Image (cartoon, rainbow, N blue to C red; front, side, top):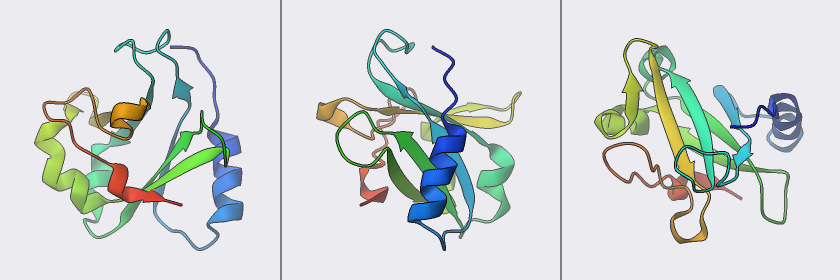
Length: 128
């Protein structure tokens, strides 16, 4: 996967667009099918397990680099409780203490987690 750090741009965009948001913020560049392990277009996040477990009623903000028209980023506001309820469906590394989320960027299954055991849909958390 190409090393392209979009975090600063994503945080700047998020701060200007959603001034009052609180919680943990994670960013992902858009990975083309040539760059991703799945050979499909995805966004990749690593969420530390301590973030998921710390407060089950908070939100985790996922900022996806937009490969479509519109804003520079796509925003998913995901309750940490959603991660907790679906933890067994995700790729979890107890050794690294992270949850790895691979969200599809393909039109047919946009925002569906594609690496874990189940195809967990994150689409309902998209904020326009």
